[in-house]
Length: 330
Picture 1 (cartoon, rainbow, N blue to C red):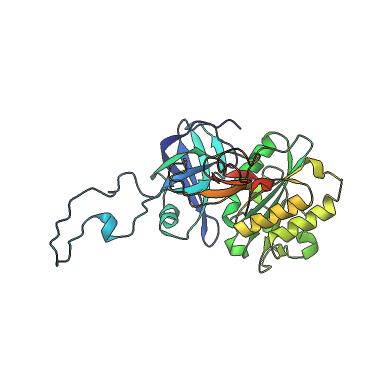
Picture 2 (spheres, rainbow, N blue to C red):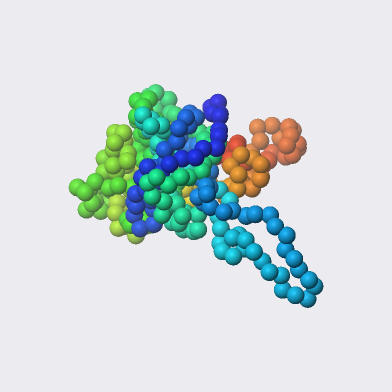
């Protein structure tokens, strides 16, 4: 896709809703946000715009004496770097663009985000990275998300509905109270393995776009017990056997690396196209810090970089985060 322009924006918190034990959905309002697509992400500064950050100053020190250290960055923990978050949704309103972000409270930065209230100001950079490519008109999108890899699948579901594409969502979590989705009350008792591996309109975020879902939990507290990759295999073998509809199917995945690696294996073994939204620690999100390297296959081993080798490194933030499964070297 052609990359949309990016920028730095001050956004206003519209809502911050707890989703489960550790997850929350943050809605940010921003004026004149560039065009964005599912798979892209933003970088969030997890500190208020008026908070005092690091300040250059001289430390006087004499040999043999303990230096007197000053400054907020030395006296307490601070979020020095921005955090990358996939877009979970986008809406145009009279006031501007609303962006949905789903986070998990696991550290200093995400804890700050989880405590934001309507009206608070948040500094972001985006949209960043490349995006998913939609399946063909007569195809079907099979969206596989695990944990905090579920949000870009919600945004993709919006786009599928907009262009009249079909889809099925496969969402995995360790247990029900770590599932960052809204389950219909009528389906809360869904535990039969036969029913659980049949796509249901039981997840509000996907059902709103007419897309059914299959939920798995490691402990069986909801949906099918086991890994989401097992549910994907079962669905493919039952609903898309060899030579039946596989040519138009595209698998999309984001989540833990071991899960994505297994999804890639499943797709490649069945000759199904697969797009992977990789996750890496990113300090800048724009290719400057070079911290998010990922190993990929080269089309021509004789061309640079690393001429003579059949692989090279790319950056998840600018060359990705979306890569074709056959290109990745795990």
